[in-house]
Image (cartoon, rainbow, N blue to C red):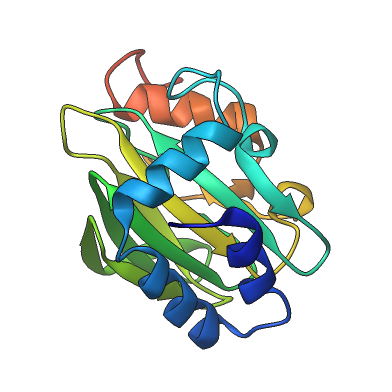
Amino acid sequence: MFDIDQFVDDCKGKRASAVKEVLEKALRDPEGVKQAFDAVVPGKEVGQGNIADMALYKSPELTILKAAVPAGFKSPPHDHRMWAVIGVYEGQENNTFYRRIGESLARAGGKDLKAGDVMVLGVDAVHAIENPLDRALYAIHVYGGNLPNAKRSMWNPFTLQEEPCEYEGLKDYARQLMGKEPPAA
């Protein structure tokens, strides 16, 4: 059975490559992961709350989140400015990667993660995510730092111009990308 406290201990002080191995091992029991996470981070409907609401563990060196992404969700491009290890335990997360071109971005590939898949993102990675399914996506996100307090960037998904990553702005862009409100003029 998946044990969250043991998982946290196994991730502490590790590099991204070692955390990837820990996460791959955990995802061999996706139902155990789901049950453990549902018991610890219940209450919010998918898509409500903020990053801190989903944190299982947070320190200056490590953040572990239960990511709950609503059906049809699309994010603007963003960075983390720290390594990240993403492991899907239910649903699908499609990633589009970008590279910086001067003051803008250019697409640079992608990777779709399905249940059981794990991916490492480097410190300089810029990506956007999408849940293409008609049901929620659930994943474990492990970051090599204090993600909720990090100074990060996001890019306007329509102009690809960089701006500070603020949670409300990210949610506004996501609503626009999902067609729930028109793009700002």
